Length: 360
Image (cartoon, rainbow, N blue to C red; front, side, top):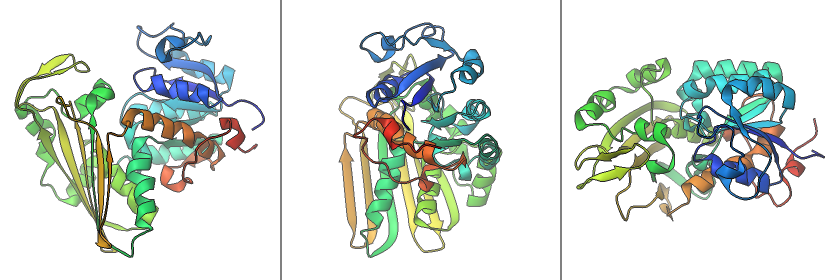
C-alpha cells in the first residue's frame, strides 16, 4: 500500500491506550475513534494514550456508521466486550461499510465452535462486501501460534496441557464479571458451575444456543485443533471458583471481595481427538492477591516431553501488539470471517505497517 493505513478505533477503554499508540507508532493514521462512555466522548485520543495532541476526538458510537461511510478507513480495531453476541453489530457495521475489522474480543479468535450461526452470518456479510473480519490478541500467539510451532519439534504427542493466568483487573468490568469475580459462592454455583458435569454433547448444544458462555480455552482448543489438523471427538469444560484467604479490593468492580468469595475462576477444557491427542487447557482469570503475577505454562507429553514457561508476560501489551501486527495479514486475506488459524504467523513490523499490505 503506497499510502498510510487509515484506522479506526472502536472502544476507547483500557486496551485502547496501547492499541492506538501502537497503531500510530507503526505508521498508521487514526482517522476516528468511537465509544459509548460520555466520560471519554469529545476527548482528543492523546488524552487516552498520552503524548501530543493528535487532532482526533472520540466520537459517539452512534455516529460510527455515518463517519465510516465518509472516512472510508481500511481497518477498524474493535476493543469492547468479550463475546461474538456483544460485537456482532459492530462487525456487521464495519462489513456493510466496506471496512476490515479485527477485535480483541476473546471469542472472536475462533468463534466457529461456540457461535457458529453468528460467525457464518458475518462470514457471508464480509464476503458480500469484500472485507475480512477476525480476532487476535495474546492467546493468538501464546496459546496458539507458539504452541503449534513447538508441536513441530516433537516426535510424538499424546497430550498437550496448558495453564495460563491473568489479572481480570487489567481488562475491564465485562471480563471480570464474566469470570465470576464479585459473585457470592452461591451465585457462582448457580450461574457458572451448574454446567459442570454435563456431557460434551449437552455442553456443546448449550454453547451454540447461547445459553452457556464458554471460557476462552473452549475456543482456543478449537483453534489448536484446526491449526494442527486434529478432529475433535469430545470437548467438556469445568469451572472452579478462585478464592483468597483475605479481602481483596477490586478497582474494576468497584467493590471489596470478601475472604472466601469468588475472585474469579479457573476454567478447564478437555478436548479428545480422533488422532489420540488430548488437549487439557486451563485459564485462570481472577483479581490478583499481592505477589501474584501472570503465567503461561505448557507441557507436551510424548517424545520428548517438553515444557515451556513464560513468567510475567505483559499480557495487555502483548495482546495489543499482536493484534496490530496482525493487521497486514487481515487486510491481505480473502474476504470473509477468517480466524487467525488460517492466517500466516505474525512478523515483526520493521517498516511502516502500510508497506506490508498488498495493493488490491
